[in-house]
Image (cartoon, rainbow, N blue to C red; front, side, top):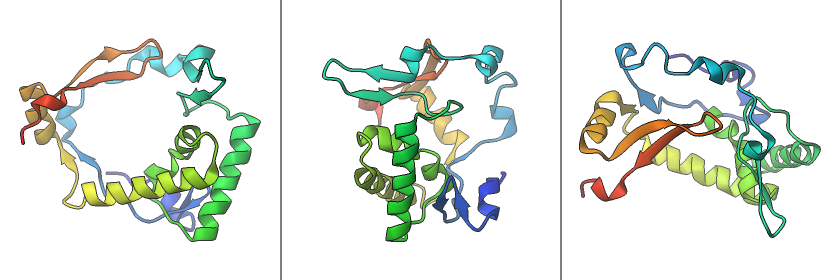
Length: 170
């Protein structure tokens, strides 16, 4: 397991104060295929319509957040979100800070609402992983039961996963 390098810089990551994060997933090396990421994904440039969805009412939502420059409005709102978090003394797992623009997009660029969403996600992660990470053995069982399975990639090369909630045992 590697520790994100951002934990070594005054306990901040992506401009947010952080707290140490436990493992979320634990799997043996033999469980990961050599070519899990297709070569074309390394050079893929998504079409504009895959990056931001536009809706009939004028709303828009960013769908791809990584490895693409943010727009001026997104940068301004991200800065405002960092100010809100600092004012509240909020600290997050590095994985939650990495999703800050996703929270902003979902909150229609409202930094206060995005901060509440980040805090709720942080709380959920603390509760869900309190007994430790999800193991490859647990995932194998879900695959065996047909609860979850991967079915390729979409047009923007994102992994497509199917979760069949009705098959989850009580």
